[in-house]
Amino acid sequence: MAGKPGTTPTTYSPSPTTQKTRKPIFNKDDVDWVRPDGRGFHQCRPAFFRTGAVNAASGSAYAEFGNTKVIVSVFGPRESKKAMMYSDIGRLNCSVSYTTFATLVRGQGSEHKDFSSMLHKSLEGAIILETFPKTTVDVFALVLESGGSDLPVVISCASLALADAGILMHDLVASVSLSCLGKNLVIDPILEEESYQDGGLLITCMPSRYEVTQLTVTGEWSTPKINEVSLSTGIIAYFYPHLEELCCIREWNELHDFV
Amino acid sequence: MVGLSLGEKHFIQGGIAQDIRSDGRKRLTYRPINVETGVIPQANGSARIRMGATDVISTVKAELGKPISLQPDKGKVSIYVDCSPTAAPMFEGRGGEELSTELSVALQRSLLGGKSGAGAGIDLSSLVVVEGKICWDLYIDCLVVCSDGNLLDALGAAIKAALSNTGIPRVQVAAGASGDEQPEVDISDEEFLQFDTSDIPVIVTLTKVGRHYIVDATTEEESQMSSAISISVNRKGHICGLTKRGGAGLDPSIVLDMISVAKHVSEQLINKLDSEIAAAEAGDDES
Image (cartoon, each protein chain N blue to C red):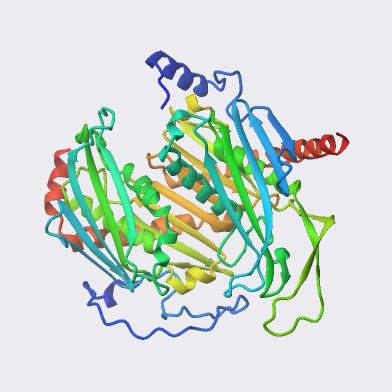
């Protein structure tokens, strides 16, 4: 998944996390700045995806981008709760939680209250909800280790888990975030880069339909920088084939053809 | 949820396609904005914004606190939105919680800038009294009194108006405190410092109905949207935040087009809002 296809191993073997030391603070005037992990600015971290991580779930996936590790389970479709009103389209229920040990400071993960609704908004455009009326699909995501760009990893992983559960979708959803550090735009930032960022951008899209399902921007951005959005859609298009290939979701493809 | 008949839905969609909406507005016209400032005497600053039937109140409270150790040279600002059940029965109990969180996060994203403080509408370093020891904590609390669409733009405008109404007491720091001691402060109740609100962005929400985008959508129009993008733009024309709502996907080129439309609309909105706020402040002083 890293920048140069030839040099990238197809699978990434998790290595024991090395002791983290505080890197020197990024200097704004530093033009020849090197990212803390030595990546190029437009290079993703080594990634690993696997479906079928949880046996009890209808579908599940595990994803790893560098130190960011998440697991997503999909349950259902199941009957909606009695209290819910009749609905001729299916319901999507998303929840993102952090383990207490996911962050450097214990329990810091509870700061991300908006992730559940962000996950919901990113996925609802991709799922064909008409195919399971009156029922609910639950998507539960758990961040095992937070290493930066947590939400994009959760979103990409959740779309895999949904595909693994055989939920009909228009397309897989791939997501990536960008950080703006001084004059530099870096893709797939790690935790440290995120904490010094001047601005951040998160984009989720369905690559084969070329549609953006979710987009958020913080910090100040000028027009040329916003045009860099196309850069990130390009990057997504780059890692999407891997996503499909790596998880061997053949059954899902058959269903997709059937639709 | 708005219960609309098929005919009404077609009427709204058809009107938008022909650039004349149900209330006679064009696609890129706002409803008249009514600004009142200083409505809550207990707060350091407050404002009420009405746009049609949408009615929101924003208050600013300033308290002295301690800066966090990672950023000793910065004050703290927090934004909370409360959707009261008096506005709509669906906000009762936990019903309003989801919307409240969504709005709070969107406002924080739009107004507070990046982690390093770049692009922030409020200069956090101006809130420091004694570096590393004392700073102002600004609590911006918003209340949705009545909701008829376009809440985010109204809340953004209300916060801007409330901040221009805010007076922060001048603080005298007693000399002599050294080392780790907490310095003694004397808060003046006569002298107040005004905020520079010129950098605070406005939020423009473009709602996509059919193939067209509209600003300042009413609840009925919002029920017909496929997706909406809220963009906050400052006076320099720079984007300070962006949030997408609605499930439908968008082509990246449409997103960029919406951004340029929002920039254009924001210029007019900033000017209009500034003159309304100035008029409200002037009226406030007289009374």
